[in-house]
Structures are given as C-alpha cells and as structure tokens.
Length: 194
Image (cartoon, rainbow, N blue to C red):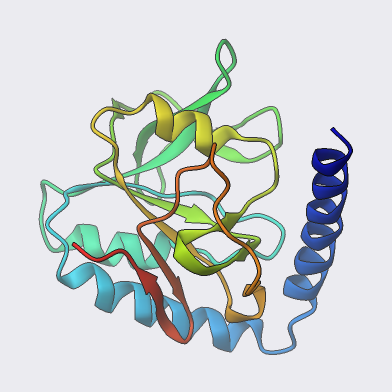
C-alpha cells in the first residue's frame, strides 16, 4: 500500500511540474506549429474515418486544426470530442466541427451539444508526459483508461505531447492500456509494430 501511495505522490509531483513547464515553454507556439505538421503528415497514411480528439486545456497541444484539415479531404471523415457519461465515468465521443454548438462540461471544458455520438476508430489522447513502450502520464482521473476499456473494438490510441514531457523511466502499468503511438513536435517518438 505504501508503494502505491508513494507512486501516486511521485506521479502527482511529476504532473504538476510537467504542466507548469509546458505552460512556461517560451517557444510553445513554434512547437505547436511543428506538432500540427507532424500530426497532419502522420494522418495522411491512416485509413480510419472516425477520430476522437480533445479540447486542449492547461497548455496542451491543440489537435483540432490538424483534424479539421484531415476531415476536409473526405466527407465520410468525422471528428469527435469527449462528453463524459456521469454514470460510469467514461467518455463518449460526439461529432465536432468548427462552429458547432457547444456547452461547458463539469470541468468548464467545451463539449459538443446535440451532435451525433460515434465510436472512434482512432483516439488522440493528450499527454502530460510519456515514456517508452507507449506509456502515458495523464491527469490521473482514469477517464481515458475506463473509456478505452469500454470500447470494442479498441481504437488505435495516439498520445500527443511536447517533447519536454519525455520520462525515460515511465512504463505502462499492468492496469493501463499502452498507447499505439506517441507523436511530439520532433516526430513519431514511438509506434507499436503492426
């Protein structure tokens, strides 16, 4: 029990430091432009037509411009943003497009209002930090873990993070679903072999 408490405390300290570091990056705008480019290039070869994204908070990378450009190439392509199901704490993905009606969720994050729900084939996840073998450090609420576990078939999961968030000692824990890929402004940092 003490190990898990210590581990939770250590992860909490890491989260706080990485979020503060991310918000203080003097070149965050330039890094975001580079990451937009990396994501757009990576998406070109993908066959999925239903992608779940996220609304950026706390200095996170904003994937929505790259996703919108991706969606313009084919009318069958859909972008979804998460809407939390209060009963089970999982995320459902509802269609998002620029200018669609939104409302604030319980955490004051905009979510689509009155749009169709769908199951993403590919899911972009914000990372506070990342490690090897698809390890992701999130905010600690477990929303994405529960959501991925509930989705069948499991979507391809891609972590998006700035390169400063690399934690070489971070490994996926037994109860976690490792990411299938991690992309930063420096490129694809890790990708599961097919």
